[in-house]
Length: 453
Image 1 (cartoon, rainbow, N blue to C red):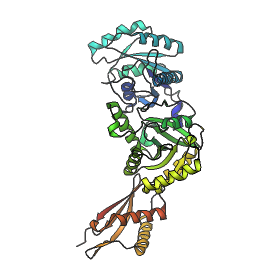
Image 2: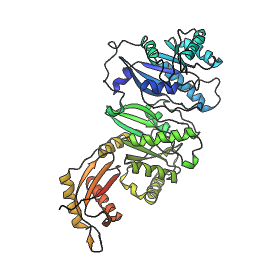
Image 3: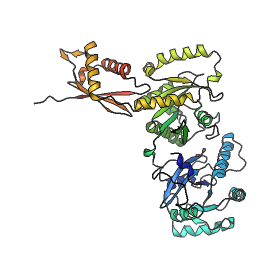
Image 4: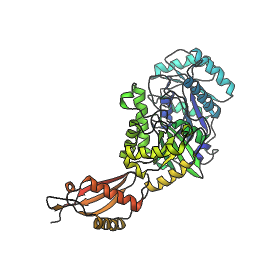
């Protein structure tokens, strides 16, 4: 996975709403960046891998260039854009072909000259051959032949790629990379989703781990809009860290873009191997924290609870004891989930999280052989027999572990209605006592075995 960084980087830049994220999604062949008519949706740098014919390169999507930003979040967006332009080998300057050149376009043109890098001018939203003639109006930029494209309809992509490729190493000159490295399902490391309500320190944690301003951090709730995938290596192990937007209550979601953001956060939970559920230690467990924890448990994703902002706690021993009591009271089923206190500011126990992630990831992959599991069930049935109803005894005929992620056990029984939830909880507790499954939600499914004739 580390070889992906050897691919040349192409940065897409331009003012807001010219279609940068649509082009990014088109190039990498997946819907990874949120697209919306509202300005300022893209805030952080999003990286992906593009493959067109024999050409392979990385692509970075950036926020929109604006003049004299006043808002602190927008100011940080502009810093992120410049980092991407510094990193890039080729810059794609994207413009709106249905609008005349603006002062912002011309100022960005002047700035791009200073980078001394190849710049490809792409004129977007030209959806038919007649509209494609508009590209000639952009010759005045003095950056070469403008290329007419429609990223929404996929028009002109071949011409754009060929122009980009002129400034990239030839396929035989680049260092070898794995054939389908961009395919998420072939990634061999651990996918870690960093989730929680707004302002608990998710992006600050990512930046502290990377030791760089990779994600924009601000006190304004909702600063992170899209799920942000970042490759990371620790002790020769590969990870993808997925920074997510804060998960608000439904009643607190006022705009469509917030719905998209929360939707991406929920998807991050489903595609992760391990979730870091971050909870503000100064707040304790709130109702929204409980909702998030319940969602993760329902999805069957392994997780670790992280108490953040530990540097703000004065009497740490007393607070740690109080938080443990609060967990037992508010979310008693979390006894199987490990938790850790950390501070992004002081970096206290920052990398201890990866020891937990590795441990929980192994637990999530654990499989119990069917013969061993049924021998175990026989022993616990001997200690505590299943319930009965109207003289009819509940019987477990046999059981097997049906899968992992989510960890699921299927019990073949005589009648499902005879099994009280308390007995199933007893079985789950016994499974954990015997086999651990630390940090891993367990599903138990009952199936009625039809009598043989």
